[in-house]
Amino acid sequence: QGVMLVQASPPQQNQQDPVASIKANLDVGQPSSKAKGKAQEMDLEAHNDAYHESEKFVDDQLALQQMQLQQQDEDLDVLHQGIKKLGQVGMSIRDELGQHAILLDELDEESNALQSKLRLVHKKMDKVTAEMSQKSKLCVILALVGILFVLLFIQ
View 1 (tube, rainbow, N blue to C red):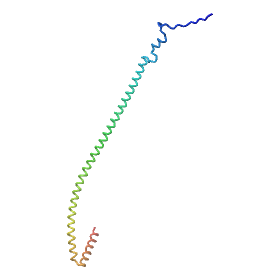
View 2 (cartoon, rainbow, N blue to C red):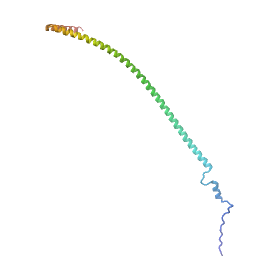
View 3 (cartoon, rainbow, N blue to C red):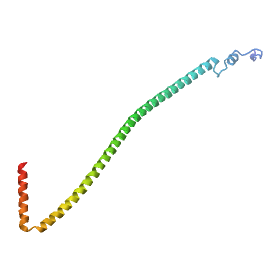
């Protein structure tokens, strides 16, 4: 009545384990060449998208700079025209001041001549008044006042 124990024999080395062979064929833990290709394709698309976005940004920035340069050129043209007009006004003012200086010099000469004449008349008046008596001075004053009234009523 003995129990007989049967021991399973290990697989022979000539036979391959089917699970091991499948694992070996699949390279467990390693992406397949198809998966690698898909990942590379996605990386390439992401890279191309980033490149196109960068290129668009650079193009937009260049367009913005061109617009700014054009606006600055227009502003400088307006400023240039204003400066030219200001220069012309300055020249006109200079010419006008030159003419006024000439007129002032002529007026100064005439004024000096009139002052000299007035001094002479004043000296003559002083001589005449010194030689006149009080009565004659009063007569001259009344005569001058009369002439003044006549001139006022005539006008």
